Amino acid sequence: MTVWTPDEWTFRIIEWIIKALISSIVLLTGFAYMTLTERKVAALLQTRIGPNRAGPLGFLQPAADGLKLIFKEELIPGGADRVVFVLAPIITVIPALIVMAVIPWGPTVQLLGRAVPLGIADLNVGMLYILSVASIAVYGITLAGWSSNNKYSMMGGIRSSAQMVSYELALGLSVIGPIMLAGSMSMNDIINAQGKTWYIFLQPLAAIIFYLAALAEVNRAPFDMPEAEQELTAGYHTEYSGMKFSLFFMAEYIKMIGVSAIFATLFLGGWRGPFLDDATMQAIPWIGWLGILYFWGKVAASLLFMIWLRSTHPRLRYDRLMAFGWKVLLPLSLANVMVTAAAMIDLTLMLWVVAALVVIGVVIGINYYNRMRTVMSGAPRRVVKA
Image (tube, rainbow, N blue to C red):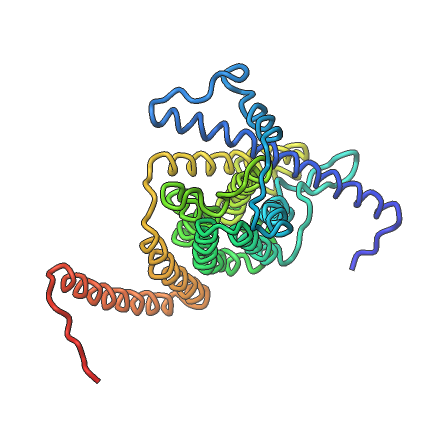
């Protein structure tokens, strides 16, 4: 265990405070300009103009939206639980702000004659911390629907809790593959283990499952059923206005940045890229700052893909959304864990496991096909009497 002197403690505390402030500023600024980016990119994809009035090329549109929400009247329904109604948006946004605490933005660099890691904290259970914090947000959404004393808000909150709990299972299982390959839950260890090959090439199925489950976790299209404006007025935030309303969307956009950063760390090598191998960084110490550019470039690419998906893909029907989570993503994530574990033990064992899973999949597929053919043909089902 490392024993720090009082001067070292002082320096570390100041370092953590500065890093936390930088992370908060980046996330809040990213939230503001993600709203503008989404409107601009969606307009480009759908042959529209998009916002272009507030400032040059609409660059001040987020500031205009913020001022509008600050001065907008805030209402609390008469029958609402006032304390929970006010706390629910805060409970939703805080996990989104602190989930980035264990994700490194870059390697350790030299700054003012000291080695400074580009990240707030390096926990040996970093992935467990991320899963724990991410699961808290569902409480804020559920409590927002319940405290509003509105049946539509309540239905939106219940649907949100059902969806997020369901997809959290597949999300949690999808990260087991990278953890097994790296042999650690530390995000730094997972990045360092991808020095030669990114895990998206070794765990492509886990990467796809993680990304789809993450979209459902942050309530992004085509998994945005908790809001579903066309069906439930506006979902769990129907009764909210002003800054309380904006906190929900702040949480959504910041979580988009967070899950993109986690995806880049687990499957895209994090801050690693060209010229950032260990030998080059030892020979040229300042080149480590390039890792920040690589890391946020990968995050930006993921965010643009999310916007593209929302602008082009229709929303799933709710029963199909839940069936997709339980009947497709969950079995596939379990199968991926089994195959990964077998491959790490013995390749022959992996082949046997894959063959067994293929047989099980074929049997289930044939059974499902026969059931659907019976339903589509309109044949009466056999009723067994007691």
